[in-house]
Image (cartoon, rainbow, N blue to C red; front, side):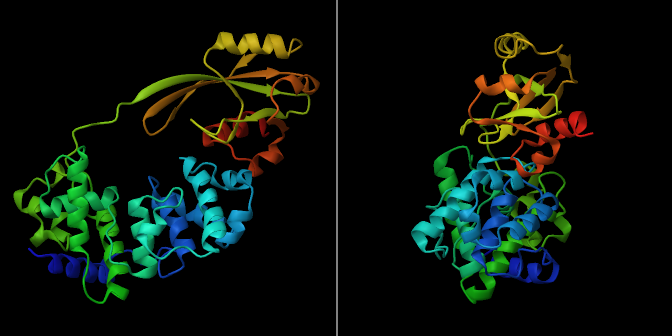
Length: 352
């Protein structure tokens, strides 16, 4: 096995069998590539497609995104999850305009200084748009390379992660970089997404099958090795669905840190008792509460148990509740950044 044969096999396979139909492919526009890379972080391609097109319609270039309000950006992102990506996306666009004259920097090193752009994402933009010889190492590519190389060091240790980065850079093509780097980078992504799967990889049709140490050993699912696992936790929230005489709901902007940061949401309480006490103080003339069905919202490392409580209130009494809040009718929700479970809840209970 040698570095050149791996790169050649990936480039040739991608040209013949890889994904070449996605809307962000076939472009060297760093704005479009960057947007797709951020959206694709921890999100399936099929989910991203619609959001990508809507974003480009609203914000066709980095200047229009930079000039937009955070609320309009979060509203378009609503339902895509991992909302810190949207906030970083907005801030990154502003920095590209303010510090780089509206032009994305051309090197992975400079790109990685921008908000929300980590080392692998910076490398992807630099490779796709500027053909820089630099490696990506997202989850899919990490799986492909650890299997091909038989790299069994524990990636929970930083020194082993650094070693894998070094090996990944060494594998990059060395010739015809203008065409080879975008093709190679896309090829590794495609292999990880379609063939070199976490479970039951399709080794026999993999272009690296003859070069893959894990494949020859018959244990590809043993890679990558990472001993430290992130523990899941759970949390219970009671949501105050305060509805006024016009069937508008009171929504408040969440803090800029934490779950649903910067989004609009009903008021959140950590117990039913705390919710009832707040209502008694702030809306003494509120109607009888009605418990809506509780449901589970699964985040990356936390299970969020949501308990919505609908209470009729008088709109005139809300002034004491929060400054950064508003009454919102069903027609207003589309333009607001709402967490996906809140949007579904309001649509089901109040939109009709």
